[in-house]
Length: 326
Ligand SMILES: C[S@@+](CC[C@H](N)C(=O)[O-])C[C@H]1O[C@@H](n2cnc3c(N)ncnc32)[C@H](O)[C@@H]1O
Image (cartoon, rainbow, N blue to C red; front, side, top):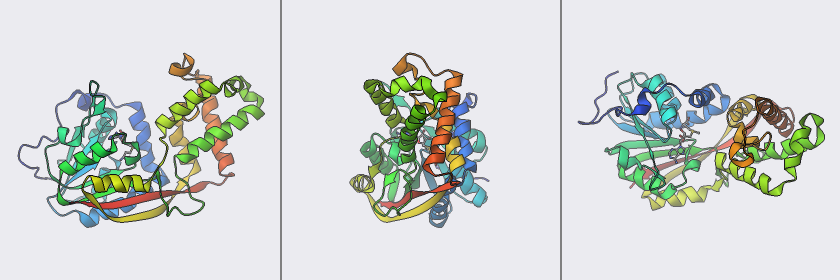
């Protein structure tokens, strides 16, 4: 479908990432598209469909492999809206381009890490536009420079523009009892895996490290780098307001996650989940052997089964923040 971008807008900058081969981790991440817990995008898609008007521009900040925009245009193939997918990962962006690059409505921007400044480029450093809406799904809990990030969002939005933020990793006072903050399952997997290693001789070779407090602290630190400690909703509310983005509504939803899907997803990040099983080069001096990786994956699966007492799924709590640029 044709779409008219503002005069001078480059859809896809001529940068190396855009012509690189597809990366394995990006392809693996993209399989979440088929996971039940990725229904977390559906309420956001409802919001976008209700809000977007013909001719408008939407920024998908941290748009990753393009799952949200793909679903948006599948829901409404005639939607007359331009979508700029912005991400810090050139590999994820490359896959998004592979999937959606032929669609004239889709543009891409890469946020490069600026080594001398030790920061990511800000949105307005890569995009000269005042958009009508911005969405961020499953990502805000990852922003280490939250205030700077939100300030850059505001600079790329018209006054009155809609902002839709959602994440399953926000401590929400309305979280229903018995539901999970999805990344907090990882600490539980680690705890249960330590028990299994102590009980089961199949894993005897990994016992020694459990009593090495300093090394285990290094693995805790690594785990917290992959799966960041959860911050409270108020942290994000205050930061958005400070960036002149006013909160309109906060909604809480339960999303059903199949244990098998979640196990499969975590398998891609086994080093972060259970690095101490077999080791990680920067901590132990060498990476895990293929056999140790098999053990890691098996421990993740068994720990999840124990955690959820063999149930096939669990409920995860997702928080949806709707806001407006003022
Ligand atoms: C869990 S993925 C979610 C991707 C996509 N929004 C979705 O819902 O499928 C998180 C995304 O945030 C991006 N990301 C991580 N840290 C970031 C940061 N500091 N600023 C911008 N994007 C970041 C990652 O590259 C990744 O694409």
